[in-house]
Amino acid sequence: MKLLSITENDAQQRLDKFLKKLLKNSSMSYIYKLIRKGNIKVNGKKKKNDYLLLLNDELKIYIHDDEYDSLTQSKKTQTRKTLKTHITKKDIIHEDTHLLVINKKPWVIVHPWDFKTQELSLIEQVHDYVWEEKWGHTFKPSLVHRIDKETSWIILIAKQKQLLTQLVSDFKNQKNISKTYTAFCLGPVSRNSWTIKKKLLRITDAKNENKVQISEKWQAAISHFRLKNSYSLKTTKETLQIHEFSITIETGRMHQIRVHMASLWNPIVGDTKYWDKKLNSFLKNNFWVERQFLHASKMSIYNSLEKKQMHFTAPLPKDMRSFISNLLRQQK
Image (cartoon, rainbow, N blue to C red):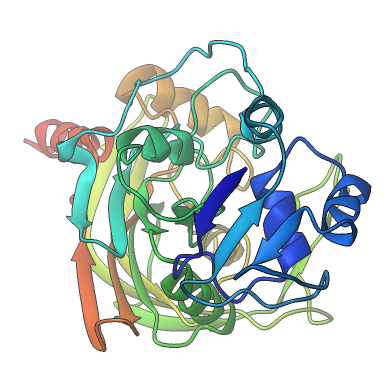
């Protein structure tokens, strides 16, 4: 018999759904059988499948220890190759009992389901980092949002279920969230600041076309751009104008900044989907540009648990800093 006390992160779940998360290697029919036969007791009493668990409820599971271990243990996975084996203090922008904020480096995937790869994902690294902490029987620190593999930016990981629910809702509804990006784009540019309001269409099964396109038939997307610095870069055939922009967005559509900038003929440097392949190849071979130079540098959120606004800043990654240095060196 196993005795569990329901924590804050476990509460407000249906009994059957909690048990399926806990006994993850079992079937739902087996879960229903345990409940029906009285092998599951809450505070000493038999409950129905849809009973809503409360904080500090005592849950008794009447199965053998060997069976419990078999049903709860994680399935063995192959050893993965990884760009880095674990989260380090240098990656962490902020950490408290409710929230972990990380400056994600480019090329690190955030979730193991995002790509067919052997690399260790960011969330798996987070779970390794916090493995000694107790957060509940069925809840693990979870990603609040996602980002492209190539993009570097501030990633939020909620350690508490209530905060996760609030932040996911805020991101979905673009409420109490402020995000500022730094991007290097091609010129020419005629203004120091402007706003783009172009609707975006996402094509789920795109093959020989861009996955996200400008379309008046789809979702609204609003981006604000402010010019920070301008540089020139000489190639064998021409001199390119490259500009550093500070960008804020009111909506969070897929590839929003990349598509909006490309639609103005100011594509993001290194963007292989929405930019010229020849220029990409030139910059890769001569300036080590391996990805789109887009970085989420600032983020503000509202923490409902602490009832305060929180602000985070992430410095430019090494490859973008090196690119600026190379541009400045060429102009001397």
